[in-house]
Length: 301
Image (tube, rainbow, N blue to C red; front, side, top):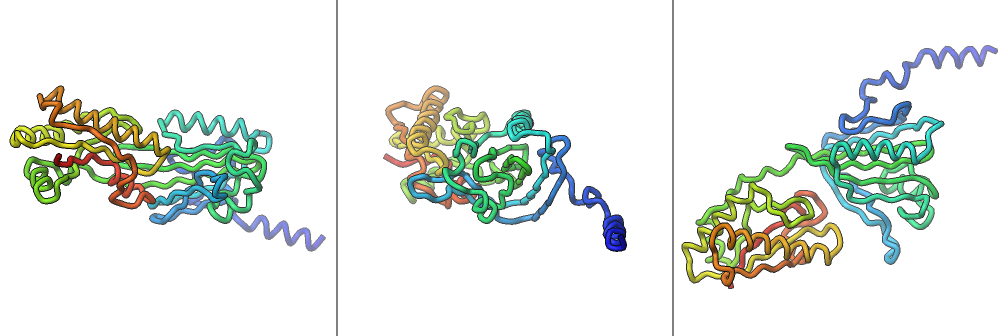
């Protein structure tokens, strides 16, 4: 009896877990109702290795490195809720925010890894929720006005992992392209990267803010009547190679079409090509590097 009473006194002397000030949901993604925070860790700036599946041929994990503010929350699920119900609710919440799903898998169908993975995911990626034979996983991207956030969601039978990596968008328009910059690049190197040309994600549609840069290219061609150009599109390393090859060519052709249709440049002076991710100028392991690799280059013919 004395031992039982001692344990009761000790238990009552500790504050409730939920009362800890830093144990709150992340503003970008709230927990399913009835979930409780089991653990939470936040670093203002850190590296984060993303799990992106399992390569069955090489038997290695597909990964990606991110850098930014890293928040990791592990929730304990309500006992009466299934993985599917929890996952569908989180999925709906992500959809309302307009996120881009980069990778997802269902371990019940051995989609994440076709073997026993629980301990490996915990040790290598700090993912605790997914077990050997059950769990759903999503890796998504959310773009806001001045920020990019990557969301990792893993829903298991007893727990749910929510990891969020926040990073500032690279400022655009600071190295504004102009006629002199383009001409110097062509004269000195035979090519020049055109800063300020932007496309919709995974599409060849030019964004309106690209018009200023394209106008400068038109001025260059008007000033040099004997100049003909290869317009070369480049992508980052994400996704299928053939898809990126096609995407880069389509983007280059969009620039060609814009110059011909809106600025009266002769189509005979322009030739659009795409090399996909095959000629990077920075590492594809970080978001900033991938941003540099997505570019349009003018090459003198």
